[in-house]
Length: 115
Length: 110
Image: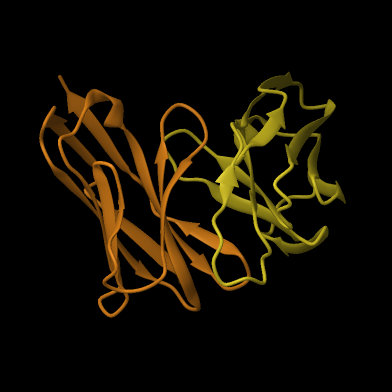
């Protein structure tokens, strides 16, 4: 089973709202990722968690706040977003990040629209 | 600055044609190169390449890496309309960073 699940599939929010995106995997992977993908562009890395600790933050604005409650779950808390934050948000996971060979498996994504 | 360049940016072929997609890279701390297929939603993993000259195959798809010349190719033989998608090349760096190319948009006409 190489499934990464994400909820919700679609989200519409106003600029003053607070919402959260959720990601879950049960493959025993110890690295999890958030990406942002705009239309006709490749995914852009936002955050990396290794062993439930934030290891990479690609200079993402503080209105995006990641959280990794346990090794299977990854959240992205959203607050005071801007319309330009509208995009497809992809979660991914991979095996032990210290290993030599690993692949990132992507979830289906949450399509976010900020009004 | 690390970069991954894919070519062509887009391609239109007829069913049954063979296509070759290219990916060149300049990154520090190279670990591996990944190919993904993206249709309407999330990228779907195709291949991971770590060693030069060893071809990976899956049905009509195959891929190979040249670490000396810093490129990889993805071949699709006997293309079908279901192969229409964006094909993404990504290079894995140490520190778990994935650097994506811009993708190649492939359209297969029936």
